Length: 136
Image (cartoon, rainbow, N blue to C red; front, side):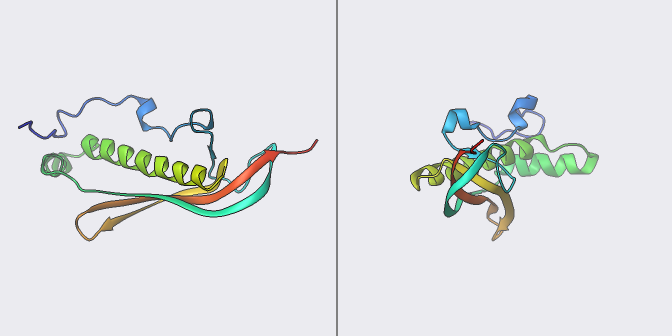
């Protein structure tokens, strides 16, 4: 049985690991936090889409986080888990948008809540739309 990672043994994450989700070139869906996308106009509003996941924290990360919180500093194990969780929620958002015929999601946001002491719920949500190039 493999021992769970603790804060001291978590693999180092580079700055690219902390960034946003995949780009439109990789997924075919542009995801923005703005109300519009410069150079494009909304041809069709499809409606709300979301991606949801719930993650529990394992004992190793909880112990490591508890120890780290006594001395201060970043909880790297929990940071890594949250990044992975947000990326999974974003992937699900993109898949739902594609399945409904969208090529973009406007006003994307994250909502993070505790889920009945079982873990953390992360929801990525926004408005699925079809964008076309703006007329010049």
